Image (cartoon, rainbow, N blue to C red; front, side):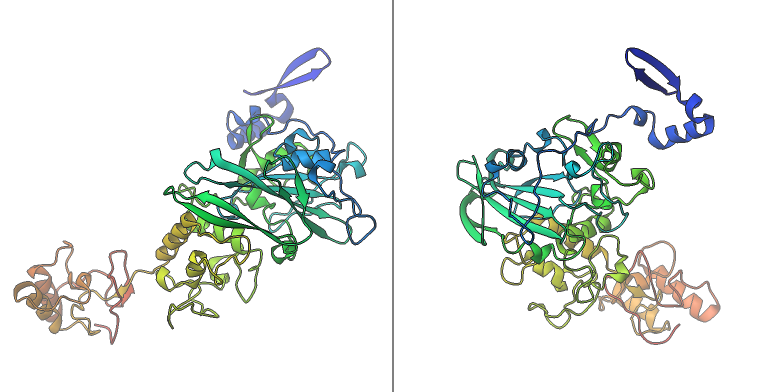
Length: 477
C-alpha cells in the first residue's frame, strides 16, 4: 500500500494512505491514478510569485510601459529568448494541437500578475471545461517564433525571428510584435505590419525565398472575441508537456492545479476532462485528430461564423460543414461542398488548405501548405463516405429482383456479357463467390420458395461489403 511522507523540520514520518483516506477511497485512488501516479513528480514543484514580468497601464489608459526593446525589460527579454522558465512566476505551456505557422517552431509562456495579489492567494485563472479560461487583469502571454532555415534539419537550423505578446488590461487585450535582429541579440517593438525575406532550403535541398509577415496591426484579426487566448483551454492543455526547468513530463492541468493557478479545484482528474489529441498522433481517433487541427487553425473565426462551427467539441452534425454548399466553389464545380463526404476532390475546405494564394485558409500568418495536415484531412473526408446502398439479388440494377437477374449473372459469367453495376448484389448465397450457384439460388427463391438472399434484402440498404456506387432504384423485390 502507498505511504505519504510527512516532514516537519527534521522529522520524517510515513503514514499509510489507508490511515488517511480509508480503505475504500484509497483503493479507488490507486485504481484511478495507477501505482506510480501517487509518486509522479509535478512539472513545476513550487510556485514562485511573479514580481518581474509586469506590464501595466497599457495604451488606452495612462503611460505606455511596453518597452521599445525586449532588453528594456529583463524578464520579458528572458521569455523572448526562450528562457522564460527562469523567471519566477512565468509558466511555460504547450497546446496539444498547434496553429500552423509555415514550419515555425514556437515557445510559449504565461505570466500571472502575482504582484497585485497578497500571498498566499496569488493570481489565479478561472477554469472552464469548454472554450477559454478567464484571466486576471495584467496577465501577459508570450509566444516566440523560430523559423527553420533548412527543412532537412529543422531543429538544427532554427532562427529566432519574432516575439509576440498579449497583455490584458481593464479594457481587454492588447497585442504587440517584436522583431529579432539578425544576430538574435535583441528584438525591437514594431509600430506597423512588416514583411521580411528569408532564404530557406526545402526538404529536397532547393533554396527558395520565403516571406515572413509580422502582424503588428493584425493581432485581433484572429484574436477577435472571447476566448482571446486561442490555445489555452482545457482540451488543449490536458496534455503531457516536458517542463524545461525540471525536465519532468507532466500533464499541464495536473501541474497547474498543484501550483494553485485555478480559482477553484478541477472538477475531476485530467483523464475525466476533455482532452484534444495531437493531430498527428495516429493512436488517436481519426476524426478527433482532424477536428483538433481544424479547431486550432480555423475555430478562432468559425465559432460559429457564416453558420460554420469548427470548434473541436461541436458534434459533427452541428458544424455546418458536411455536404454544405460553399459560398464559392473555387473551380471545383457545382457539386463542390464545404466538406463533401467521401470526396476530398470536391471539398472546398481541403482546397483552401492546399492553396497558397488569395483563397488560402487561414487567411493570415501562413503561405505554405501543411502537407501532413492536408493528408490527415483528406483521410478524414474519405472516411466520411457511407457504404453504397444496394439490394442483394438485383444483379442488373433495375430496382427489382426477377428472372432478368439470374440471367444477367449467367450472361456475365459464361457469355462475356456486361459486368454487373454491383457485383456484390449478384452474390445471393453465403459463399462470397460469384458463380453459377448464385443464379441457381436466385431462381430457387423466385420460383420454388427457396431461401431469400442474405441482406440487404428486400430493402435497399448499405453494407460493409458494399458496392463502389449505389445502385438502389425502383421497387422492392
